[in-house]
Image: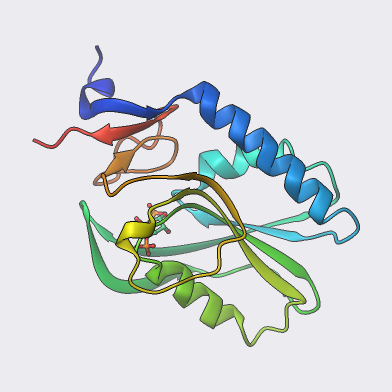
Length: 177
Ligand code: PRP
């Protein structure tokens, strides 16, 4: 076992399971947005792996853009969301899909949705790989979900602990200590 995998207590979602689910999500988005040329927004940095894989299965013309917000420090949510990078382009009149790695307390996406609300998008929907509903502090409308998970701290496939382990190709439960 290498030092990267030593941080994993157990594999929660394998590479194969992720790949199969991501393919289905991409196919659903392809169908739902067939004639809409959506803007697909990747939430940096946690969503990078999911975003890249998902886009390979979205087989319609679309615009790529990015946002970066941060609320976590170590393994805990600070409860305060910080805006680090905004969208490059206008979303006025466009259909927007926000791609996240995980919805946990919901505070990040609540902040994003409120922030985007005045920019005149035709629609804004959320696509998340992981949903941890038991930890929710504020409800957010999630349209596409990869997997619902229990309240465990997970790493890999974009998710970090102290900015490490994002490059694991699967989702694992973090081995504390
Ligand atoms: C993580 C994750 C989501 C958010 C979810 O981001 O990528 O954006 O937390 O948590 P919430 O529902 O409790 O707000 P983080 O702030 O760790 O930044 P990162 O994307 O760079 O990992």
